[in-house]
Amino acid sequence: MSRVLRLNTLLDRRFQPGAISLDAMRAELSRLDALCKTLGVSELSRFLDTTAVELQQAVILIDDTQVPTADTASDPETGLAYGIEDMSWQPIAAGMSSLEALEQHLQREHQGARTSSLLDELAYCLRALSPLEAEGAQFHLALTPD
Image 1 (cartoon, rainbow, N blue to C red):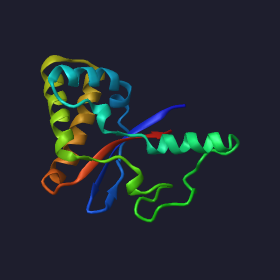
Image 2: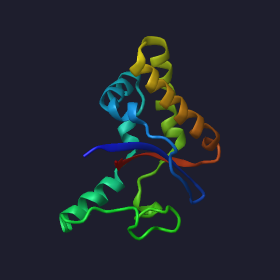
Image 3: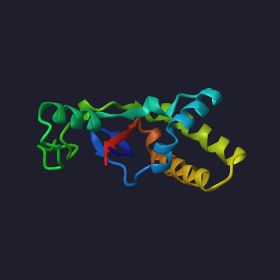
Image 4: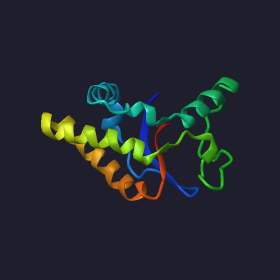
């Protein structure tokens, strides 16, 4: 079963789901985590939220003939089958140092199409998070079923 990684933010109970799928980051998550360790910053997997995947697995365990759909009772704040409190949130400031360190390292040390995609996705995350950091917003990297 494939998974999608998206950047979600939360500011004053305003939930903002990510606009793009972070395919390169998802595919290279183990490598990026190892690089984060080397760089002395928090691993990206620390910022993962797996609520959607866990919900899907629970529904399948209860009734393997039914897969959860977007029509499942929606939370009024998130529009999802689960609410803000069900998800794992981290301060944006905590993630910025990891994202910035990865971007700087990859810009200096690596070339190639795969690295280019990673740099594009890291830049997207930094652009999305930077204006919210001073406001005390929170974020996570949401791992969701495809």
